[in-house]
Image (cartoon, rainbow, N blue to C red; front, side):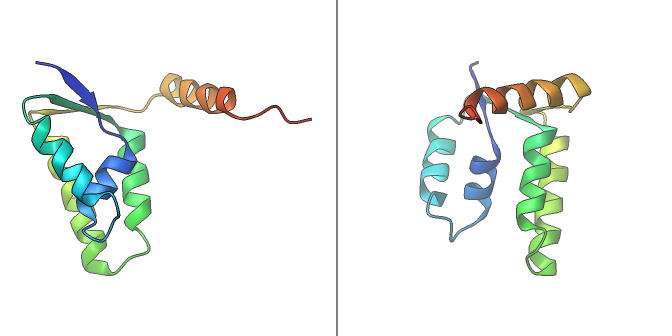
Length: 100
């Protein structure tokens, strides 16, 4: 079984029917139905943050979906650690143009 990484963009597009990438997220989900999904605490925290300013019902649905992801046997959520936080920071720094 192959694995695919699901980032915040994917989770938001999948959940938000009005998102311009919603149909692409659905198609990808269907196409990779046999793949294991891997995500991170960081991606899920960003997902919750994205919906945090919405209506109460939307916030509840976002929390419930994260709870379901955490309980899922087919989705692996990699916990955040200081090491993963620093690795993400280093990756971001590598992607930023030099500041002079």
